[in-house]
Length: 412
Image 1: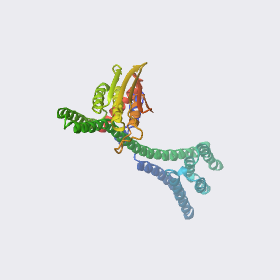
Image 2: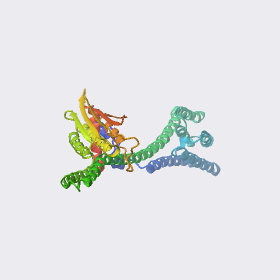
Image 3: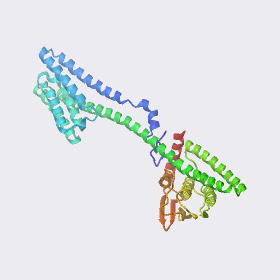
Image 4: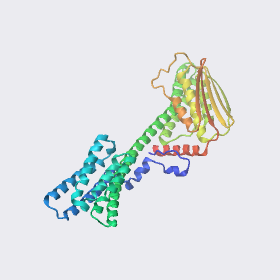
């Protein structure tokens, strides 16, 4: 099942598609893997700091305090790196960031260089939780604060630069890995959503095609069945001919159902006019048809045939018409199809449930050929006017062909 976003160039075929994303899922890390990579990086940083502290040969009390502070910073960092942490309340952010700042700078007075890398976690948390302007400003402040320990100890400029650079680099690593894990999670959620959109679009296509293709056929079968019932006693020969028509229509209906399952179905406007005249005449509706158009584009030909079929279906199901006029004309690069009938009966409603939403479907179909649909009801007449350009923009044509190809793949 495929859903493609329309594009104007061949490159657009690489637009987001659920099936392609699924096919490439082996190259996309799972959200859990992204979080595990972040956790592994945090543990590595903390392990290095712990080893540095143990190598300082301090007494048991400072070492215990250092381990407690390390565990506190680790817990706070995991809290700040969780999905949606930036959505926490301002008071909560101030509280946790203040606690992390205390756990970062107080042990620095005792362990000095061995504790220096912990400032990088505070810098990363500031980037994760605060708005960009404030976050980057305080990120720089934390990096600059690491100038103090080496300068107070009189260390060389190279080592001073190392303290600042390692702090800023650690902050960027924590910030980048956290955001990367979030992006992986969003990517997987988006892929699932696109798949659901594709399924919904396929359902709409299937329902629209069933309405457009079968509504007319079933209405015609019902109409001819009633006609046969009336003709049998007095005109069995004519009734037999109508039975043949019913069989033909029913076979066509079966073919239509199969075509819906296999994708988009091409229709002929001129063939549909002949069918419409036959069905309307059987319903004792006087029909006049005037066609002044040349060879139509395949897509436009199908859309106009669909409009005519739906309009005739409405005449049979929703009206008490005595005449129907069909006019198709081409002028100034535009094709206009007009169907008029006098069957608007005041207070009349189709007694069948779910009488359909065919006009809405027609507007959707006309949109694919840059067309418009107009409906007028006046003085007992009902007029449907469909208009579309004879020649469309090449990009629009390519998009329509792509949609049709996608529908066929979806059904397959």
